[in-house]
Amino acid sequence: VSFLTLDDAYSPPKTVEQTRKLVEQDQVLLIFGATGTPSNTAVHKYLNSKKVPQLFVQSGASKFNDTASYPWTTPLYPSYHLEQKIYADFILKQRPDARIAAIYPNDDFGKDNLAGLKQALAAKGRTLVMEQSYETTDATIDSQIITLKGSGADVFVNLSTPKFAAQAIRKVSELGWKPSVHLLSQIGSSVGASLRPAGLDKSKGVISAAFLKDVAHPQWKDDKEVAQWIAWMDKYQPGVDKNDFSNVYGYAIAATLIKVLEQAGNDLSRENIMAQAAKLNNVRVPMLLPGISLNTSAKDFFPLEQMQLQRFNGERWELFGQVIDGHQ
Image (cartoon, rainbow, N blue to C red; front, side, top):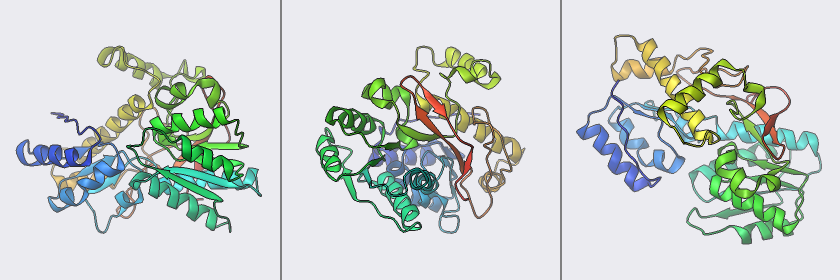
């Protein structure tokens, strides 16, 4: 396998430029594992028009599961709508009379998460008491957090990317705002990228959801998959922060592509690659939590539809409850 990588700097125009180079100059078989909702959106139509597989995009946006209009695109990240349904169900079970406020980035990622949260709450006859957005170019979101505190909300849903998730956690603490439940989107839950910059003490009690093993947790110290991952990191990425969730996710997503290629056998046509990507049946790849597997069909490309809630104890995430199927 020849694996070519180009940096798009998380800039959609740059994504278009680099993707065109890979497709038209390098003539790659497929595009794989690209990061971000805005970036993948920028090349969504282009790759489908070229009939180039856009596999396992690192986004849970519902648009990437449109099998009828975009049959050459598959997500891997759990659906944002399913994640938000899990959070909404948890909130209303724990706090039936909760006053819920949310913050989100004003982009496709944030809007899709917010829509999923609102949809799940509406199904139970509930609404948000306040919502605030921010631009990803903003220096801080302090003013938005001050406004949200003023709403009187006692549940805070933090639908932020890592930098702003850290800012929100830190500002909530500085203001002395003590929501009974502080939920953090899975995207923003990295200890290395979010919680440590926010302050581990300030992050204590925050709740999120997980689908991958937390390599820093003692419960996995004798786990074979984690041991193999650590050895791999030491060999190929020495000195890189092992607490950065992206390193675990990248490993798991690569294993998923390998599974698709193995299923494809000697027929490495683009058509067969897509056919195999739609035929994942209870597939286990390294680093998934126990009880979670990958499943796809021709009508549903989202492979990950199960997650488990976790609470940060000031040092690490602690799983609690059972694995939840977001469809149930």
